[in-house]
Image 1 (cartoon, rainbow, N blue to C red):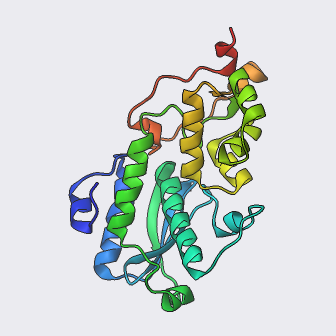
Image 2: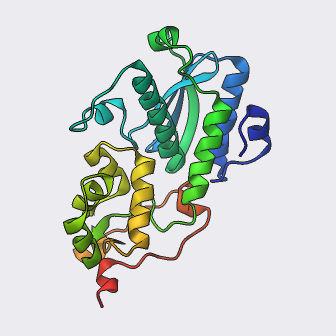
Length: 256
């Protein structure tokens, strides 16, 4: 989608499901009505859009690390108010992406009693819904052709990944590889490293393209032969539902 409420209303989001279109419509309606309150999205992971006079102040979702997780990252310090504002905007974009790339059940308003104090102290630190919708749509489209989803896959290192970890310099890539043990998804690793969900998912997709990361064998293959497969939800709005990618090879298949 292009930025702006009018353009956003005319074109469906990349994920193209009725539930996600409902969220887009509710955000644009809230902007038109200058609504102050919470727009709550239920589902997996779901989340809350905090709105002030129709503008988005912040978005929270259990699907992506929030301010507390980012600030708690070892060695991270905040230089001042400008960096804090930038972090809050980054968290907002990341949480919107987390909601849109999951399963959306419903969307409704939950009115807040007062205008959040941060909006009064820092009125420029808000986003127009059309701008947030456009950027979320761009992120979803960028990941649509990739093989790895934020929630659906548990990941492991390949032999190439083991070698890469041994020679990697400190940084995001090394942090990600350290947690590749066959039990963690992109979301899990984002929380473990205190990094944004989108940034972690993009880097894991790059590692997969380099044959350093593979999707771990499913639980049925690793454990009980009759283990129940995860239940899929009707009208899921996950990234990989738009353009179903080839089934990723497991680490077991790669080493045969």
